[in-house]
Length: 82
Ligand SMILES: [Zn+2]
Image (tube, rainbow, N blue to C red; front, side):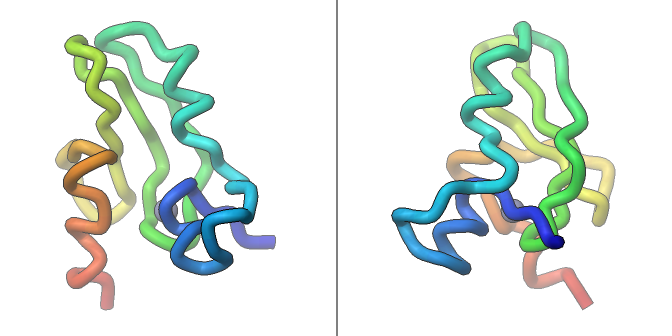
């Protein structure tokens, strides 16, 4: 059973589908400067999300070590997936 994050769920199943990995819900419980492992999104390869300290939702993928802004830079890495 594959799991998908909010935006991958929308891409795969449409606006009305419920995400397996609700990153916005998980994010609510992450304190500033902390992060959480979220399993693995089979769509974008995201495995962790965090709060950058200013309340920005950032994410990390299995494809590299950097963190990106989930709301604006999402799928930045998708072109690099072989
Ligand atoms: Zn995803």
